[in-house]
Image (cartoon, rainbow, N blue to C red; front, side):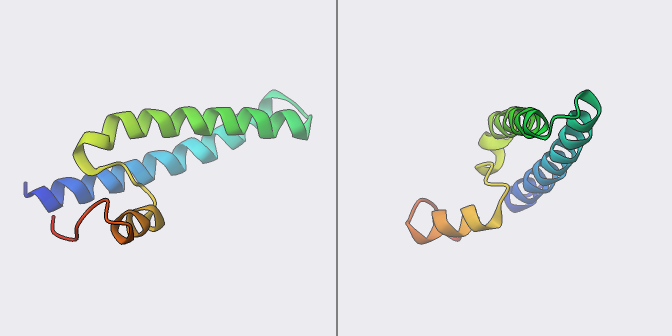
Length: 84
């Protein structure tokens, strides 16, 4: 697989897992308590945990930006160039 293909695959997988983590943590929080404040706290901690795991796992493959806005900002400030 080419370098660009590897990066794109890592970003796609990272985005899919982040989406599943956010949705899953929301469902989990709703089932654990009726307190909305506590639900938000549980959701935030679970989402942060998923995000940290994804960054650690996918960082070496693609930079683990996951968000296109982060990639664009990194490119604009000179942290990366446009060549794969």
